[in-house]
Image 1 (tube, rainbow, N blue to C red):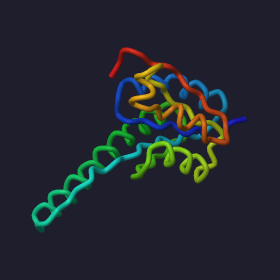
Image 2 (image 1 turned 135 degrees about the vertical axis):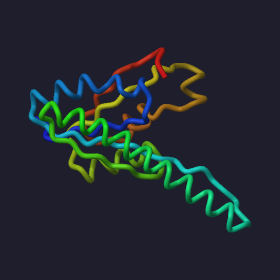
Image 3 (image 1 turned 120 degrees about the vertical axis):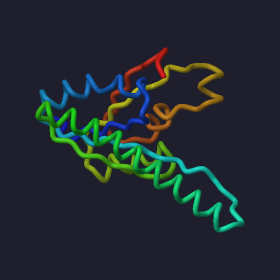
Image 4 (image 1 turned 90 degrees about the vertical axis):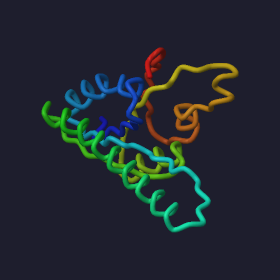
Length: 148
C-alpha cells in the first residue's frame, strides 16, 4: 500500500510522537521511511565581512545539528529493520514537505499537529493545516498536546 512514508520532524518531542505510529506502519507494510527537517534561516542584513562569516557559520551549524538529529532517528529505525533515509532542506516548511513528498514518491506523509484551535491557530498558523490543504496524497496527523 505505502512503499515510502515521509516523516517531517523539527527536533521536538511533540513531533516525535508520530514515530511509534510510523514504526508500526513501516514494519507491517515493509515501507521505507524518509525523515525530513526543514530549516528556516534567519534574515540578515550584513555590512561587514565578519557578520557574513558568522551567519554562514550559523547556517553550517544548523545543517549539522539537523543532519545529526535525523541520522539518529534513521539509526533507530534501521536497527529495527526499517529502511530509512534523511533529507535536510531550507525553505517554506509547508512547501518543502509537499515538494519532498513528491520527490521521494511518498505514499503517505505522517506528522503531528500542535492541536491549536481558534485564535491560536489563526495567529500562529498550522503546518499540518497548510499541508492538509495543499497535499495530493494521504496524510496521517496525530494531535500532540502538552509536549515541547
